Image (cartoon, rainbow, N blue to C red; front, side, top):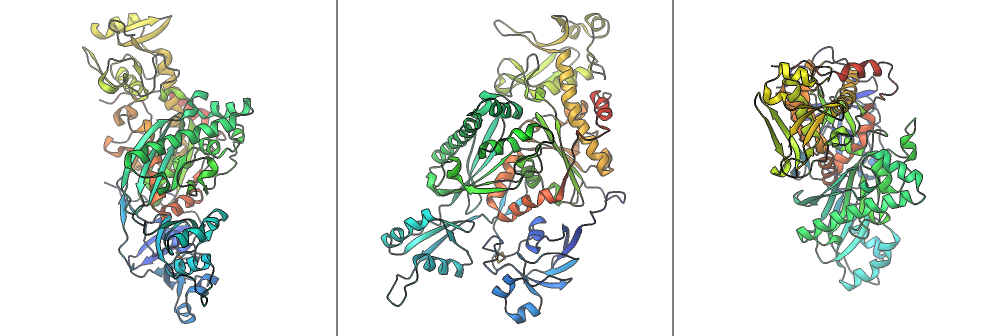
Length: 626
Ligand code: FES
């Protein structure tokens, strides 16, 4: 249950303006200059629109009740002078500059919603629209151009339309071959095709979580928001290193490195699109748009933009803005004139994947104070509520991925993912229930947590010597404490027949301490910045492919997350993928994503004078809880 708001929580920034929507009486605070439409999207209020806030449909009108909303040219175009005098404004051009109250008319049609993986319903409002056109054929007394004929029809339906040369070239034949009975496909305001007859029932998009290691794609029906399939594949770039710095280094050391990595990302995504399209029986040319959420390096590489400045202080990305461009420019094989939208980033190390996570969890848009941690090589952390939200990135290193761990491995078949140590035995659970061959990240955390509980490791991370183990542990555990090449280790699995033993060494424990220490420090810095403590947290959300599999109790036991009750720790799954889906299904949510950089403050850890002290303190493990 959410606890009452504490009076000592920080107050909103002075630059924020309040806006109240009637008749619901819901209020939010937005930066000055935010449009009324964007403010409504930020808190999930539905305002009518078919043009996606491009000031062309005229449907987004609201009535000013208190405050001031300056009259814009778009108001004059869509509203008459009496309406303007009565306070009506187009919400997509009206900017909030002062405290404002507006009244929102009832929607003409009940909005469709789609349920997301995080359990949040999202208003279905895709950027792709298909409009069936039965156009009047040209006559001597109606010599409008083909484009004008289409535009007139679309404008009446509330859509603006621009057409590139490639569509203009196919337009005359497409119209005449099909007796001017066609379906216009709009991606945003771009006319990308004229399909014969009525094809409005077939409208698809692909949402992509472009991870450094794994790429996940979901095919969505844009008419109803349903999923038509999901699949994942290894990012082909992994042959050039497992982390972003190795990929950047590849582009720096090889003249063709950047184009090679760009092609690899595109090929991996195309493989996913192929699998999805074939699996669902959907032709690729019915997939009109794709959204991509990825960290800044992955997005730079996909776009073919030099990522080198991301790796050198002061760590400057070429772009953090959202990108909307023809997918074919990147050799991505959806509809030949389909488009790609990449979510914006907050900084060099808090990328579009985290913006997607914030979209999926709604962290900066809800009153509850929540901590979101995406655990990985680069730990991304956000803390806040609709009052204020901050974020940072903590360099955790590769331990959570199983790298630089003696028996570490990725979370694949045979990896130990769960460890339970009793007085008598060690019980292991492996992925695929196969004989254990190594330890993945969640298994590593579990193993250390259990060894702490049994006293094999102390709070400083030090493992018992063989002699100490014999004196203090039951024999069945003491015999598992060994030395390998002079390094203390605990045998998790002895290795039967040809199988290798799986051990956890003292060095592995230190690696985990550094990784969890970095993330715990990031969390501490954000909590200090917000002047809150663990008791104030309404919820701790563990995200990312890895965060999903960490056992909350183990994460708390090793001090990876603050000491809150376990019912307040929740795994939220692949939030980057969820955010990409949400952005594909809803232009309003895209606007909220684009608002994140203005609403979520980035805190740079390397510039903090208290970083070292906090980091050293965070290396120790908390005392075991009973
Ligand atoms: S005119 Fe279409 S949303 Fe404002």
